[in-house]
Image 1 (tube, rainbow, N blue to C red):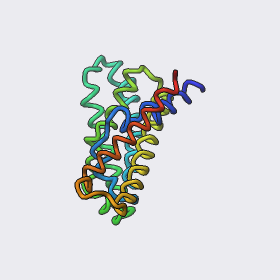
Image 2: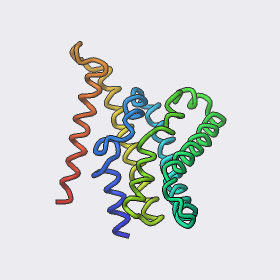
Image 3: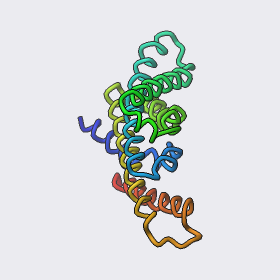
Image 4: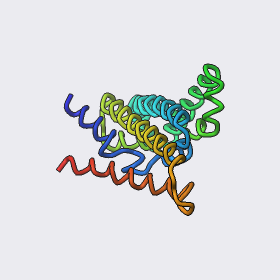
Length: 192
């Protein structure tokens, strides 16, 4: 149980996929302009990331390893991720057309989000059990969601702040992301 807690905290804070490993930067910068869009995007990514990691583990250990086809893991994982994103998009489109419109192009881009593929591959590399993989995926998803929502809130405040003209727009966004990344890298020193 302590191992699962360490995996969760490690994926959530210490090895945050966005701010420490720099994976998933496209939705982090692109969909964090508004708080409501960032919240919706983080929920969709959380669902896809967790479900795709679990399904990838099952397919890898249940199909690819017994058939000695482990070299196909990346292709299989990408197909699993694409299918999960499609199901999520269809559900969101039918349940909330407004939310589907707000997310726009960023929802299908979850398919190419390297954080989603990274979780599945890193869980295999670390030889985690199914429970460990699920915990790792939940921690990574919660870390991604927390950073997205936090960054969106900061960006909304920056829209109303007196930012000097040369720093408005992309420069202040990147400076803020860098400062936020430095703050999260401070969690890495907790293990020492």
